[in-house]
Length: 259
Image (cartoon, rainbow, N blue to C red):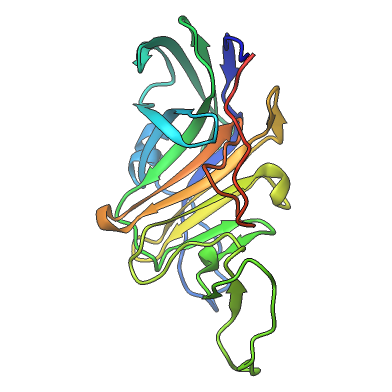
């Protein structure tokens, strides 16, 4: 029997930075700071900052979601997730460099609650697939390569030195041609537990870096792309719950926090 969840700590986003970044592939220019402004003004230049609470079935299918916008340094809210009352606390700390912040929080279940996750998330507006998505050691440029529809690695018969790169369906990737897509990784899947994006047209970028995991195992680092609404959501989640299917085609056995 699953026990009641009492507390669930958010991942500690040790470093959240938003900077102006020239988008020229052969340029030696580096990221430059935005004009002096508060952390909230800096976030608003690219999108919005959220606490995201999700609840799942026993087979890792999402059944509920709650987004709470973070627009103050310290906040505490009591809200409903389904019929369960939860208390959500968040703290944003400006770092000494003036261009980045540290974000942490806590979810407390007032009523019985199981199979939940809590995330720190940045939702970026005015996004399109020309943007760059990077997850160290696992994803570069969103892994938007031509896909061979198989779960097994195989040789490509028409391979040549100048052909487009090809990956199998088992490789995490975002879609092309305006189709919605998502990538669901755990912190152990990457060289560094971080995710970064760069908006081509707006010449602005965002980097999130977190710790490895918590009481319920590795964190999740996810990206969810919504081309219809021209936005992308980056989540750092505790615990990491890969919804429904893994990239090897097997069903996900991840579950949310529970006692």
